[in-house]
Image 1: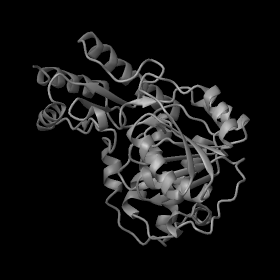
Image 2 (image 1 turned 120 degrees about the horizontal axis):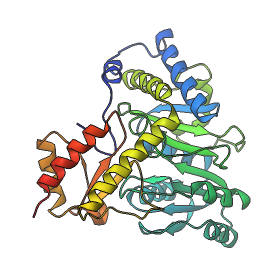
Image 3 (image 1 turned 90 degrees about the horizontal axis):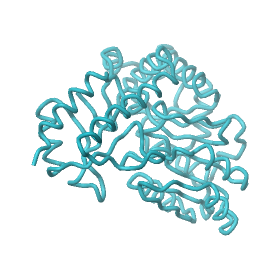
Image 4 (image 1 turned 135 degrees about the vertical axis):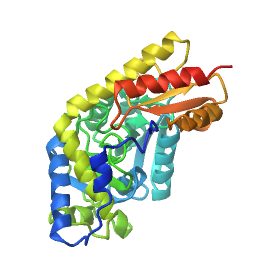
Length: 349
């Protein structure tokens, strides 16, 4: 069973849908596109949704290359590995980046965003909602985004492992654009990057130096007729449609609540056993937990894999020191209890 932070465990119906092979200019594929777009528009209350064959990183880079400009001043907040990757993407874009770096137990204060915006003249804020690399989150995203909007900035959010697992709202929180994917909170197979733009966001999406594949405006034009500009992975798009149908059936709020309940159960049990989990109450993720192990973490992960539980290894400074457990996908409380039983048996010095 897959407990990585992505890909995640999926249902049999989503797996079956991923096997579909079809002409991407057929009515069958347009119907699949229409279903996915309708579901995403319904749960986000935004009409401007783009689907592209690729990863969550592709979706992040589409925002960077379609919305931001070379030499634009951007505030970028990072908690770790994926925040750093986002900053690398911004620097490759040619942006002038003003970095806010946080430790796992530190919150991002709205006032420091406002102050840095005033001092730097930045026109955009780009941050990672949920840091997949170490299990931290910007739990006060609404307040941070609000401070940025009051400073006149565009607000762009990488919610690759946050969307459909943690609360996030574009319109009421002042977020202009979100990048995510299908293979984490939505619980589909890998292969679809997703961009969602606020309906009120009216900045130009056309940049003369934007690579064609990363052209968000072109993608949105094709979405209007339920097509993609370039040949997509039809199987991945078909699976996404089924996964979104499952999400709508469960309800977005119910899925977010389920993820939170699972996280609290893991935290409670492991804390009672004396384990440390990265982050504090205000910064700890609910979709990805970074658990410090007693044995070498790669050995623990390998042993869990042999027992049928696939978890993620620690990244960066947590390499060899932690495992990462994803609480997204079609898992149950019983599945989690079984994983923890095996983990506690194997992680003994």
